Amino acid sequence: MTEDEARAAVESIVGTPVMPALDRFADRIRRESGEQNLVARATLDTFWLRHMLDSAQLLPLAPASINSWIDVGTGAGFPGMVVALARDIPVVLVEPRRMRASFLQQVIEDEGLSHRITVHQCKVERVAATIASVISARAVAALADLFASTAHLANDETVYLLPKGQSATTEMSDARRRYAGLFHVEQSRTEPTSGIIVASGVRKHR
Image (cartoon, rainbow, N blue to C red; front, side, top):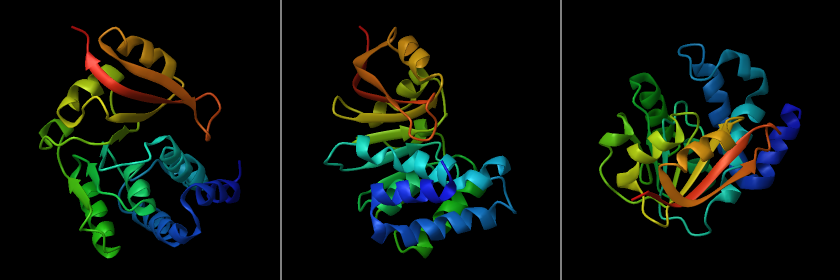
């Protein structure tokens, strides 16, 4: 998939009116990458495919009604900032690294979205307990560890959307030894051999 095709795929998901904000965000990431390692430099040439589409593809997997979305270990804002720019919903971005959190806060302020997007510069375990409709994370921790660290943010209706690369099926099988719930793997649109774990009703085995 070319970069133009990836950008068009994102537009088909989020709608044309959202694209100027996503274009600004993409340009800002590229500029800021000269100052800090926001994304791997090797991925800048495939930025729309590796980061923007990889994030936007989670939106169709989310519930129709969303009260809040929490993105764990958001890094440069993937997928959380893409979700926040694409949908008018409260979004919480959890990022422990100071420079990345500061970068995200500045983007939020410049876009005039401080009223519904919050950055927590901390580990997710320190985020105050509040129930999220969706919890997302890209390559943050093993699945069972992520469930444990976010238990105070989830209930039976919370949907986890977790891009996991080629390890998706294996991680899901491992997590099922410790956790019950509804689990399945969706194929990633950005890499045919990669998967997205979709989980709900997650709870520890008694």
